[in-house]
Image 1 (cartoon, rainbow, N blue to C red):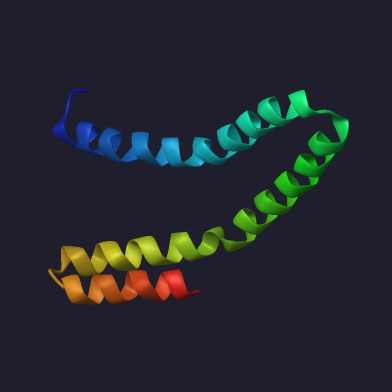
Image 2: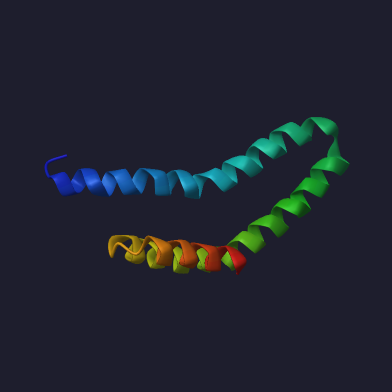
Length: 92
């Protein structure tokens, strides 16, 4: 890291990468555990996994819309506004 900005970018990028990797790892772990129960439970998990990934994919825009709004309000020192924006995102 040559510049302080590089450290700041890395500090933001690593948790973001972790969040992106968490869901597939969660489903992979479920598959490994349920696979020991037989083919019928594994088939059910396969269907549920597809449904879950579809829902997450369709609703991810809420996180992409809410996060910058909350960040802007926090950056402006408007903590109550940031909380309201976060709650609005949760309601959606």
